[in-house]
Image 1 (cartoon, rainbow, N blue to C red):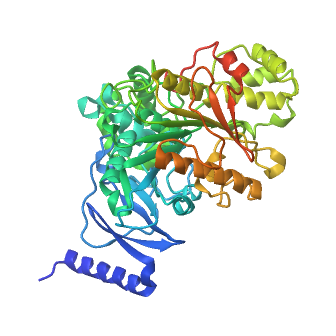
Image 2: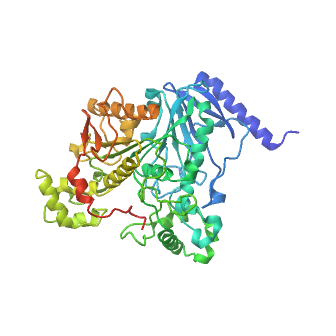
Image 3: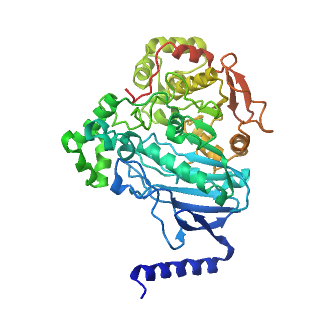
Length: 521
């Protein structure tokens, strides 16, 4: 006699078969190691969403991920999976968040297409691979590539370091969000051929926190051999948290939950919403902000800092390292009075906003000498950008060049025409350009021919990099690797150009003071 499970499986399989018949050839099926998945063909691309690459993490909080539990019927892969629980999101969230999304021109055709795997931003605390800006349809179609986006554990779920509070079982708890990405990359390798891809041409690319995660993966032994090119967009990771700082954050987090350090195991049974709410606790070393969560130097999953004291031993992996010209317009563009700044108030505003500790009066004087045409507002955005992620990008590029590893630097100069140009070339501007999604909700690039021209150039460049391991293509002037003598940098704009050592004065200015990744001390 058939069991209830058998009956439900037969009903679900019949339902999916009926939908396939009704929609004709639009529905497609792919085989994964855990079971078959049903996707859809649209705009010439096969799309699978919400594909499990790992098991539900609810029963394994703060522990390394496991492979997904196998299923028998054809599993619908038509909707994005839940994002990791996080603050202030409209997305569906849940701890069963280890899923990915695939866009590919064809299945099982021995196409050996480059695999372009995108890691989302949002520091290590928020975001998902499900944003409309990350939709892979246009990029996959344009480049004849396989595009993958990933959801993984974030904030306390992915980076709460309990190794010194809860014992050896939790030794790598500060990095399980990154170990999720390692598991996803194993999935990509194992299933590349099924989705028409090449497991030997996997490119990781990511923006902001996504770039920082990629920089960290370069230093993780478990990620070796799983990707072959890396492109970071406005996201760097020079140092990781040490065990002292990470433990202090864990203690502040536990205090917010009213849990003693001797009773850490209670974290397993607390509602996810309460765990998320506790992330609002004040950070013990970052004045005025909530708890920082990020990679931890645990000597196991992460045995060294990502880019300190030198570049990680991944010289065989070519890199693109990029930033936007006006990064901090995304962070400070809505600050009261920011567009009406006067010279007298600028130093105090810089003192609070610079990510390095340097005399702000000296900074203002140097900018007025280098750029006499700049207004106080333009000086503010330029200096805060140069002292923030641009500084980290320079450090990574320099260390890679010293290592003799191929590295290509870029700066996005294209300025959005929207709202009178107030966005400039701000943080996140390169996402819709690379993905060819300038018309998607959330894009601030504009949709005029100039924006489309820059999008064509940036997406073709990333496609070329994924295909051949270098970014050169017919849309750009020859792009030489970054070295310490010329510091060649591609400036992406309507008319892109290669420039040696752009912003050289700013580079030398901020090189006078130490740089340590904020949140890692």
